Image (cartoon, rainbow, N blue to C red; front, side):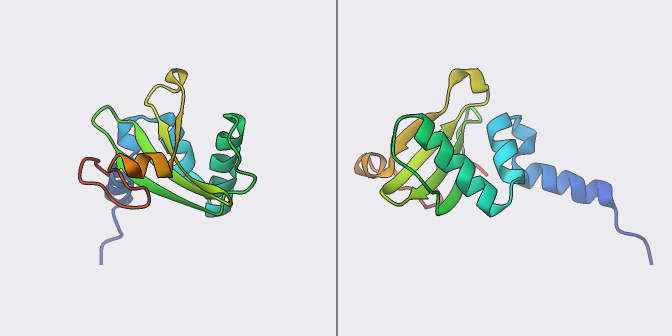
Length: 116
């Protein structure tokens, strides 16, 4: 019996995880455990001046055509969509999910306009 080919496994992980898109913000988040990711996204929302003392849930929605990563975080007072650009110097966009959903783009769901 042959040993598993770890090169293939690593390649599949690289494709599925989004690391092939070279998005540093996403690459950092996807490697975190759930609790660390919840905290990191909540802290990011708080630093923007919005209220999110604790992240209770996070969700990766996908990438747009420019490799911007779409992440959701649930806070006690509301849900947010965070947009992590490929180049972090462009800044992270943060929008309340109520606003996004009124525009017809629901948080917490897969969206066929995004890739994974």
